[in-house]
Image (tube, rainbow, N blue to C red):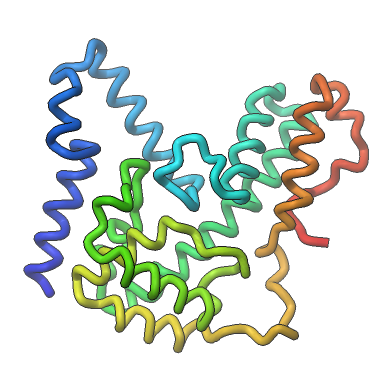
Length: 240
């Protein structure tokens, strides 16, 4: 396993540094016009990716999934607000609520990996960049089957919607390291499925249709003054 993980680390680091295949790299200029600006932009992009944990990391528009679209819309709407304003603060609450849901799922995965002995490697195994591509996966069908197993036979995900695609890439890595079956077994043990009668954990559920409808209404509602006068905007993060 150690040799396999070392090989994975080398390939992972190479992919992160190059951001694609050799053919794609040859098309890029060897030296950016402004190297400092380029690296600052890359650092910020990776920080944003880790902060938002996009469900489909390979979708730069963040519009293909409802949850990504909702989070992206909230971020764009907040960017139009005056920092510190009532509208800005309300949007920040809902943005953090969506991020908390995603961090909760990631923390479950990290806990299982650490229990399997990958204390130092867990964060790297869970990192998925925007350069991730289904075409580069080694065991895509097997990874998808395992993802559906985790979704249907455990409570590792907080939603009954389709599980985030970012975890396909992680399962593909675990298959390569030959620990995917152990991971699924641990997940079933640590996070057994909830009964239909069980209530959702408070704070970990989001009414996406309501959220999207309100964000779209807000985007079409005009300027910030109208937003701040909207007394029934409320907190969009909790499912009523």
